[in-house]
Image (cartoon, rainbow, N blue to C red):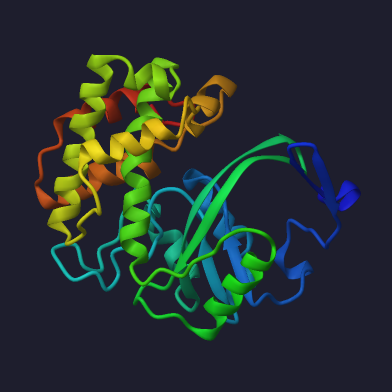
Length: 287
């Protein structure tokens, strides 16, 4: 679709189409300065394998994805330092192909929808946060930030990208699976005292896991819930996926929390219950 019709972006009444080289073989394209991985967490390893030729010269690799990047625990001082997360990269398959790249974290604050192949409707774009794992900002990162900003999207560089990534997962790890299980939008979940209590319990468990690995979130659970309410009656990506019969990001958004809690011997009963139910209804889960 990209080769024949280009990439079309629809924002309100505006419609723009862009033409560029597109291929499902990285070897067919020019050697990249940066590679942006923007796939579902359950497609991460396959995407890396498909783009293997693009990584050989050590480019900047941006993980503009939900969940945690493959390098999240590398160099993070604490009980899980340098451990591999099976829920992120089963068998370490992707990490072995990314051993020579320069990782760059990203947190996407935007709402978009693919209306058809190569046609993307943009509901809202807030910002794209970039950050290097060690908190520095290389000239390459600064240049990428400049390019994205010039394209009309705020693109700050964070000195604490792990905290930003963890804070994004804080909301995704509970609202997404609960919405998929109940087939409810945000307001319907937050307006039900029983579901709200479940979400609050999961968020509290998440905070404890983060504290164990040395990450302190910038607000309380109740303050975060206020932020969630301000986003309006949104539909989570998992709700859209389950209604369309697509595989759910259960492992990448909640399984990763369960895995880390297990390694830390940290009890997370509410999260484990929701995880078990979400796996059971996930079209992409093995029996």
